[in-house]
Image 1 (cartoon, helix red, strand yellow):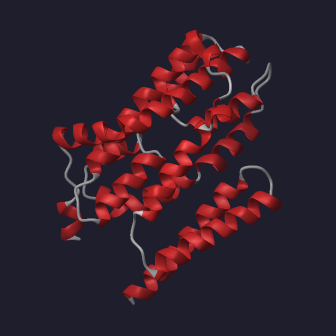
Image 2: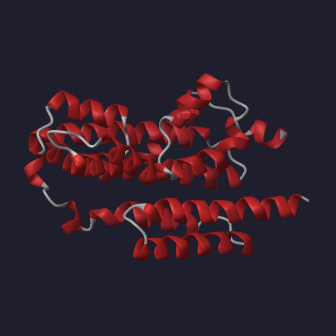
Length: 236
C-alpha cells in the first residue's frame, strides 16, 4: 500500500509531461474528431451541440453510435444501452487504477478519471508497473486527447469534407496498433498471457455470435473476472 501511495502523486510537471507524451497520438484523434463533426452536421445537429457533445461526453465510439440512432425521435433506452455496452470497459479501467487513485482526495480522483481513455490508461498502467509516477500520463495525456478531440470536432464543422472516410486511409487502425504495442511492451508472464487470451477469444466469439457491441462487454468481463480470481488465488 505504501508503494502505491508513493506513486499516487500528481503535480503540474507530471501533468505537462503526460500531455506532451500523448500529443503525437492525439493528432490522429483530431482526424476522427473531424470525421465526427462532419457526420454530426449531416444528421442535423447544430454547431454548438456538436462541440458540447465532444467536450462533455468525450467518447468517440459512443458519439458515432449515438449519431446512428439520431432522428426526429431519439430512442432513449437503446441509446443508453448501446452507450453503456461500448463504454463498459471503463469499469475495468477504474478497477485497475484503484490501487493508486484511492490515495487521492475524491474530487481529484474523479476529476482525473473524467479524462481516462484507452490510450492514456494503457500508458499509465505500463508506467505504474515500471514503478513510475504515472498519474500525470493519465491526467495530462487525457487532457491532450480531449483537447485534440474537441479541436478535431470543430474542424469537422468547417473543413470536414477534406476527409470524409478516415477508414479508407487506414486511420481506424491507429488506436488498435497503439494498444497492441502497449500490450507487447507490458508485463510478460503466464498470468497476463492467459488473461489477454481469454479476453480476446471471448470478444471474438461474442462478435461473431452475439448482438452488436456486446463483444466489448464480454471480452472485458471475461478477462477482468479471470484476473480478479487469479489475483485472489495468488494472495491467499
